[in-house]
Image (cartoon, rainbow, N blue to C red):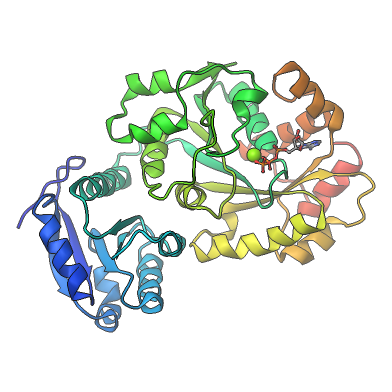
Length: 399
Ligand SMILES: Nc1ncnc2c1ncn2[C@@H]1O[C@H](COP(=O)(O)OP(=O)(O)OP(=O)(O)O)[C@@H](O)[C@H]1O
Ligand SMILES: [Mg+2]
């Protein structure tokens, strides 16, 4: 059977790995409503699929039953992603169990579908896989903005403060198109920090992800001092069980902007995992408080397990006090990783921005340090000699 995706005009050739016969029958029944997947091979054992992993990972996608034997299935999933990091694996399960969804996403799955496989879900999944593939083959001349994620390892570390400060500084420095997206479903504060009044929010972007075009996008964002801002929902929303449109929304944003800066609540929930998977660079933010340092240590390996490399993970230590008891070297021992940058405790700079409903000023202690960070990010300034230790010394000496 030949099938055409709406996005790329080419068939999505998939292998189906499904030991569960009931699930297999349910998928077979549902596929008549959404025949876009061209299933070119059916395998009913994980071991058999593992033997052919090298070959299977070169197909367009895999539909993988993750319920029959979770450990085997996740092992196979990881192996396929290891061979081909862009491979689209769709986890299949009998139910929409959040724990299973999270485990699949952590292991690198692109999609998750549960029986009875509603036609709408199948169609959306195939569209997103089509978009993914289109993005892979898109000529480099087309815009594909850099996606930088900021996430606290522990609430209140200062990820939002750094994300919005950096976004505005990048725009001022480059004059390029910048999007700042508040991807916080329950506690987004960027609209409050900047006193933005908006009609639409992230939720509208997610709900209309399959229809988004440039005109619709313009009505979803608000421009503030040259930066487009997608704000978080006004009322806290429950965590997404089916978070996949996040990837589509981010992918669309990258086609419009040179820089997409996203502010996450955490990297550990479903939305955070998807966003982290899509990001070019993940800025993990901790404070110097012990629990925050401890969580930085725990979070770095989690991202590595998801296939993110060390050079994509930036370790940012915020609210470093001149009288800090721990040196950067001590922190690096705790993290078992280098510190990318430190940012000073700057109560007056932050409070002034809060009072005035604006961005942290460039001439504040924090503003100066984020400018330095942005200059390094833009390659305008060589990384500080001596790595993190040099950064710490420069901080002590006044950046
Ligand atoms: N370098 C700093 N100096 C002084 N105060 C800071 C600094 N960075 C952040 N803050 C303050 O710390 C608080 C938490 O910051 P922020 O909201 O940026 O953290 P977060 O990691 O995004 O937290 P959340 O878990 O709420 O998303 C805010 O009141 C902010 O103004
Ligand atoms: Mg925040």
